[in-house]
Image (cartoon, rainbow, N blue to C red):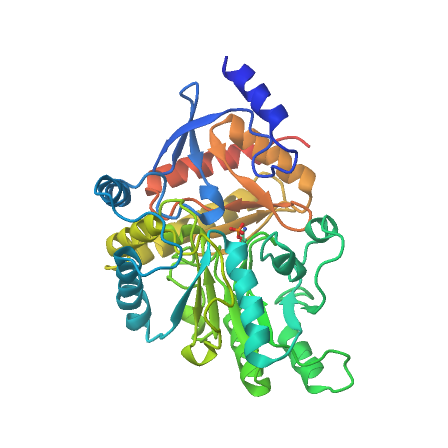
Length: 420
Ligand code: PMP
């Protein structure tokens, strides 16, 4: 009966469904890092909703906060009216995240999804500077709506839309021309040269570790050079921390250790802490040039998601244990992954990443696909990313215990031996 219900579901759901199309089960339950299908089979989750479940599935503390809130007739939806849940979230985020890091931002609630935050950022950058262009990078991913798509590198996504809005200018991301070329030098020249054909942009938008683009971490030097050239040219720096933020790299914001100070920061995915939709744009106060109602939307500041977000901040970010755990588990996973890559006579495999955002580059989409399928059959959920879907990404919940993490790697190690 389980396979019948899957069949029905597959034919009714649009082909556009992407993640995990090839996983031939219906999932039903989940706790922590473990997913369970309708037949009671368990899978270790190294996908975590593409980093939307950094605290795992159904964290009991966060769930209690949601249940308690719902049971006491609190406000679930209120457009963007003032609510106590919103006030609590702003206070918590400011006190637990921003102030201890010496950061000061205003909050703009942008809607349910990451792409909503990206759209708002592109509009704001244009309005605040009066300029039109936005510079983004090869392999960057910022979302599926037209504006976000315009600054997304991958042709597969872009072509589906026909024409995307004009004004996006792509530059090579760090490492795109090989490790020896500092591509920020190139950008610096392009911006300084009045004959380069590139008008001064409103903003530069980037991920510090590209997620969908193949797990590509930028170096600290490169990020600092970009910040310098933004300051020199009076261009806004937008960090899209939708996938790499909320602790994924071992620090709350992925740019903290680089010491840069973006003008706009975008968060979503794990912000709500529970897989509930919520996105947020953090802006420097001098950039708050919006007029009331100029950028609207019905579902801004989902109150239930703000409650779970507050609970996650209070549980996980009022002490440093999570960050230390992420760095340590990430280091162990990286080490193991290197061994996996080096053994098995698969010299084509390469490993990249930062914190618990890791990628196994298989060079071809075909090999990566085989490994992913093999891993699934043995009880591990992983997915692919990169221009050719050639990179297996590993994004376990940050709260995973090291035994389960190692079990996941055991499965991956066996799966890598698959014949192509
Ligand atoms: N930016 C980045 C870096 C992302 O990884 C994603 C989603 N993969 C988005 C933006 C878009 O977020 P959403 O899918 O929630 O619209």
